[in-house]
Image 1 (cartoon, rainbow, N blue to C red):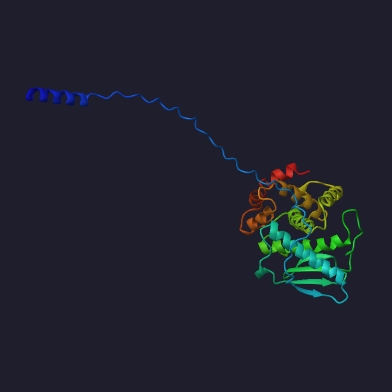
Image 2: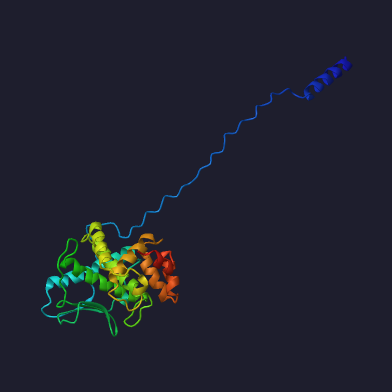
Length: 285
């Protein structure tokens, strides 16, 4: 009896040690990996002028003015508006207005027949407007006396901004003359657009008129002591440069700050506008 009991236990143990039958699970089929390509949103296309706005947010009128008795109040107000429009444009599109520590200059408005407008005197920045000599112009389809007055204020203020950045003084201009005047004219015309006083259509017409006035389109002739005032050809050149510049209107600040930091004009030009000055001269037309 003991033998059979032990045999029975032995059989049970053997059975429990036998490998259990099992079902082989099917190999799961992996879903194909999904590759996600992230596409960066395209950068906004820079145009040569900012979006039109009905009015610009103006900076406080915090300059000291010396105004001759008899200067028409309306003309004085237009000069002030032009200056403030330039300040708004520089603030919003060109990296900032003139800093407060460099705004300690006097704006002179006179009636003495010496000539329209300048930005500097012998001692430094001093916007100057003579309202008695060629101040008012004949109206055209795109430009009238009011626009001219605004543009004068904005244009001379843009030169003061260049001086504050270190690329223009009374007696020294490291940049080509066409670029100095072109920057100021570009800022002033686009300041009027920012304020809603000129339109894209006006600027197209202005550009056409400027092109018509230019007898020789070689920019090299307008580097130093140009044959005529270089603002017309300068505006057309800067407009073309800004349209392609990687940083848009900020390039106006960059080229000034480059030469102020001791870089060559050629290096500063290429860093700012993304094209060498020599190559730009070849393609400008």
